[in-house]
Length: 30
Image 1: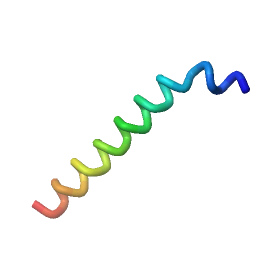
Image 2 (image 1 turned 45 degrees about the horizontal axis):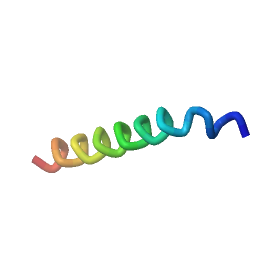
Image 3 (image 1 turned 90 degrees about the horizontal axis):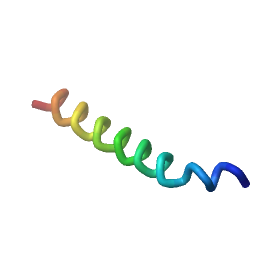
């Protein structure tokens, strides 16, 4: 389970993608 070593980066990347998706969704609606 070497992937757990990059867990913080993975979580940060996931949050970044989620925020980007929400922003893109709002931009499309607005």
